[in-house]
Image (cartoon, rainbow, N blue to C red; front, side, top):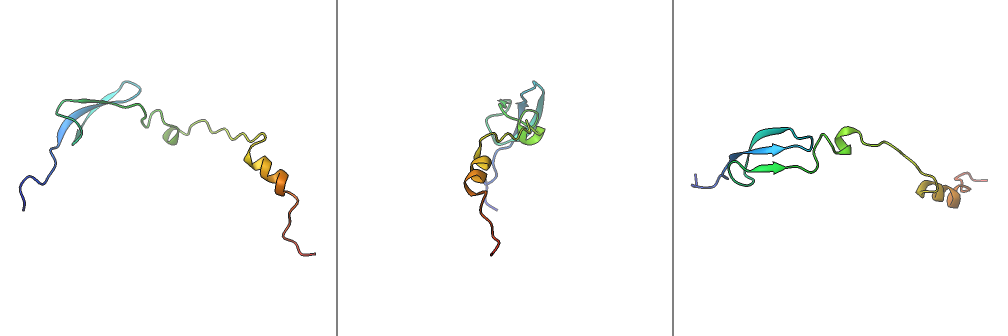
Length: 76
């Protein structure tokens, strides 16, 4: 095998948005660095369920129905 083909893995501290921290091994940064996250599973709507509001007051669906609501596939 070739020498020096594997990346240098080292420990860093990851700081979540809620202030919790954990240690992990990575190739990012240098040994002992702190990665501070702006978005993580505790704060991002994709993981938390988000604000599941579906408001379409005059939005795209309403405009579509206004323009094409009278169309039908029936032959008559």
